[in-house]
Amino acid sequence: MLRIKKILKNIGVYVVLLHTTSLVAQTYPYSDLSNTGNWQLNEEVSDEFDAVQLNEDKWWVVGKLVDGQPVYEDPDNPAKNVWIGRAPSQFSGNNYRLEDGKLILETRWEPDFPFSETAQSDGMVYENITTPCIIGRKMFQYGYMEIKSKAADAEITSSFWATGNNTEFDMFEMFGDHRQPNKLDKNRELWWSIHDWSPGKGGASVYTEHHDLGFRVADDFHIYGIEWDETGVKYYVDGVLFTQATAEEIDAYAEAKGHDKGYVITKSIKIWLDQETFPWHGIPDSKADLELNSPAGEKEDGIVDFEIEYVRVWQKEVEESRNLLDDAFYSFDAPISIDGASKNWYIPAASTSYFTIQNTKAATGINALKFAHSTTLTETAVAFAPFKSMQLETGEFTFSMKVWLEPNSAIDEIDVIFEDPWLINSFDLTGIETGKWVVLTRNFTRNQVSGSNDRIRLRIESGDVSGTSSTLYIDDISVESSTTTSIHNKSNLSYSVYPNPCNDILNIEAPLVKYVYIYNHMGALLKKEEKITEPCVLPIADLQSGLYLLVLESDNDKVTTKIKVRN
Image 1 (cartoon, rainbow, N blue to C red):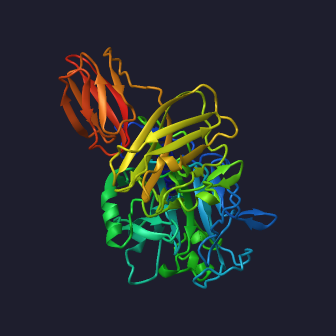
Image 2: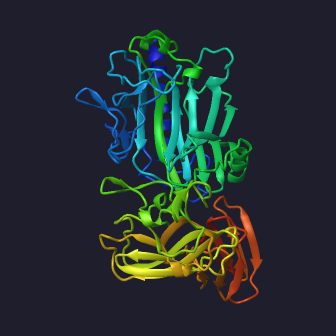
Image 3: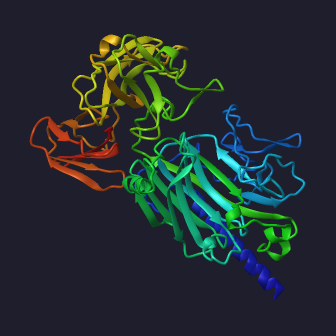
């Protein structure tokens, strides 16, 4: 009988290994195995955890022990204050291991750890419990995030979340077990949320959802997939759409709670994997309590595990056009790191009464740059990005920025200056519509690469303002390569599509084409037009900012290309 049991156990192990190998070979989201979404794996932020050691070029281990002491200085941003965990637990850099192709995050009962003597604001001290935290070093914007994991079976959270640009995106914070009778389903709960950490908001929860998953999160591995883009969030569990929320729904939810907006996750983020104590759900008060649900042979080591088989992030294959500038910095949402130092926009003292970075209005994200004056402007107002914050190669580029001119303002012109090599781009504001965000664009050519002092200078001179009171907001400054790319799909059709990016109309030159279609990234048909003029002028102002597929069809052929809308 013992021999039969051993054989069956070995067969079971073999089946699990076979399944794991098959899954690792799969490079598409579990909810889209045929890749209808045109996903490409972002290998810089994905990890199969099948190496001997954790790739610390990809992950930063918080609280790594150096000479017996935990170090919490962010190597990528030494000036930044780093969170050391929620008391009574504290992050330790020793609390992880790679085992059987998985990342195992460990919560430990460890009273002798060199805990910080600093109490948290709620008065709790760090003691007894150490937890893990690893943070992705690379940031990304939008995509499909997927994790296969099993939560720790204890009064500890097992979490998959992200931060960036004064925001927090909690994909899940799972509480594996609890002892509170009024929370009977806490160990079955999916809880995802969005937080706003911009100045004055204090990390306010601007959106949250609670759902019963129908299973205990610590009983087995499950696959959690989060599709995130400018239109909202879709949440998949084991390949099936579980819940979703549009950006408009999230904003409405936040406004009902008294917040300006809720969909603040519109900039780049980095992934966090960690465990924490949540005192309001209960805290292990002894090693035995921590390991109450551990297997019989594993109750003496004082360790409980959060097991992660992989983390994968895909992004759209159609996303070829991208901002060559630092997205968060040039959206006024976060500083930029240059030569290891954190830098922000520089506004000279003489211009601080005109230019300010504020969070009362933004096209996307949190902040915008505001220019305002209440008397006749008699001097030049300027705002500078730091040196080396623009590094361009030679080639053809498109500059764009969003501006909002308040009604009754009389700002006639704004200069955008590239400093090394020197180039002045003057934008006429006299004819733009007021009271809404408008995209200004300008194509330019660089015949030499950026010098060491290249940066952007924004300038409004006294002669550019004809009134005594005006207000202008600026956001989402971008430089993109204007090199045209397309998907030919073995088509012989000749065509030209411009401008790209576009914001109100799209011109299509294609003599043989009879029908024009526009699809979103989910494959939904948004527009179908019969082409009766040459060139065809297609209105697209009703489309939200984002990437779309444009299909041109003749009698016996068709071609697909990509367009980007910036409204």
